[in-house]
Length: 353
Image 1 (cartoon, helix red, strand yellow):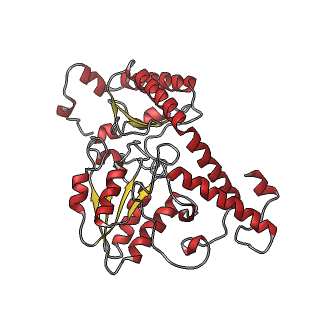
Image 2 (tube, helix red, strand yellow):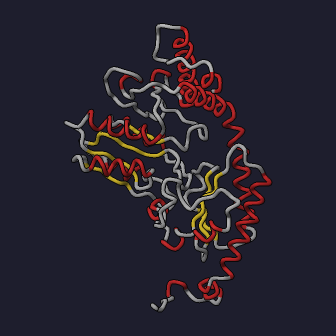
Image 3 (spheres, one colour):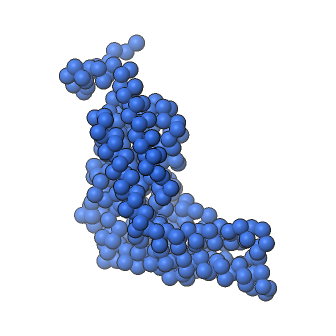
């Protein structure tokens, strides 16, 4: 990326001089690197500023294109906030949205998805890997359903790219049908940030080559983290399916512990009580509530992230700090004392001051 910040600064859209040709060449190389990772054609790659903008372009673009015939969108209750807020926005424009529930494992029921399809359904939007709990939705089966009913399939794959195999052709993910002029086939105007695109392309190439190794290594670290915590403390609940999960995202709830207090004691570890987009909210995670997690347990959830550069020593340190903090908070908890005495917490009635 650095050469394109310092010296090779041509505009990829300028086709009348060498500097522009040079930038155009590396941008097209990056498109190929990105498309190779997801099973697409380089011509299908549209560069945006990020996932939020991409979701907006896809959902608004498709529904506005079909607005005279298709007025219905199907999505799930556990989608990223930007998709849910976007759906609420187009509801105000007169579109109808079906928000499908998920099971206690966080996965959408394909029979319920099929039943929700209407003649005027114009789009189905399902997140590949959930950003809070890491579950992997049945993308291929969803894509087959969309293909059967000839409905465009929008997939938010921000948490999946480079972490799990993606094949947009096999999954029947359909690109928005929009015509126009200008940059990026008229879908997204603006000068392309060549250094960022070069970096993204290189990252995709590395991820494609290292994905199998990363998956095995991160799965081992996830097991080390989970087993290390569970061997030392009880009342630990995994949120979401363990069978269909990206190993680098582990969401745990700790009974009889307040999540914010636990976070305060884990300042040395980069964990969160929800997604980065909603972590400022004191409300329990809407994703966990959609799974049927009770409010008190939803408040105790912690999301652990494991990546390529995470070490065994860091995992062991996270285990030690988590266990110590949970034990400390439980020692201070009157509720925990009562439960240890055999009192059913659901029968407890707290006096109002």
